[in-house]
Length: 306
Image (cartoon, rainbow, N blue to C red; front, side, top):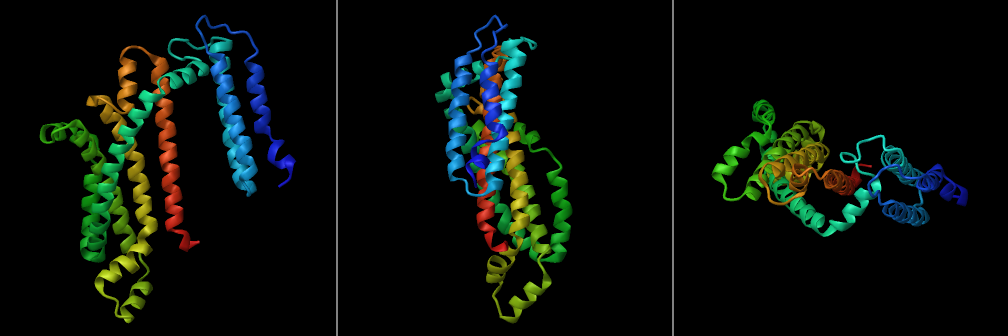
């Protein structure tokens, strides 16, 4: 790609526009931390420019610049509506610079809460996958049992896992174990249903070919049927992962003493909406990052299907 295609793009003009907006006088009576916003924008733009050197495909570069441009537009509109024209209530809607400054101030505390949330999610998610995939393979292997189990799965998966929290609190020793239990239920049913759907949908010709080669049942399940079912299994895993973060945040807001849900709930109770919005944004970025990494893993494991 040419220099023009790499660096003379609309996203970079939007970055300049964001900086020019910061030259406008502030109408908010509170400290809007313009310097924090400018510092963040400059660092982010520098990262985008450096990344542009290494991205070889035009599609990947366009995606990066589109995301960067979108972020610049959001920050510009947010800044205009808060710090520059004070259209929004500055107590409920702090300026972007103030949120960035708050994140920098609370970064150690936020990092501890992120580790707690991700740790609980991974425990429940991995435990559910470890149970649901083998069980789905064995049950889905029998068409008769698999058809019946499909309706049972639909029944139990229709019950929101969060309603089990009172029983979990009564039966389990700590709230973290309750959270892991809720994540397990949220993930188990989509993965189990996806595994069974994948097994039942395997092309009969593949199974017949394996039988001709006298493949044993364990090899049939784990070397033939499992790879052929991976697409549906990952579909269930994606659903379970998305629901897991929603339920975990809800659970942490009910009775946890750490985690990002607790961070948001704790400060919202005190009317600290700067930290509340900071927590909401961090949750969004964490979910995007985890989902991105999981999709990369999925692409790697399914690379043979390309």
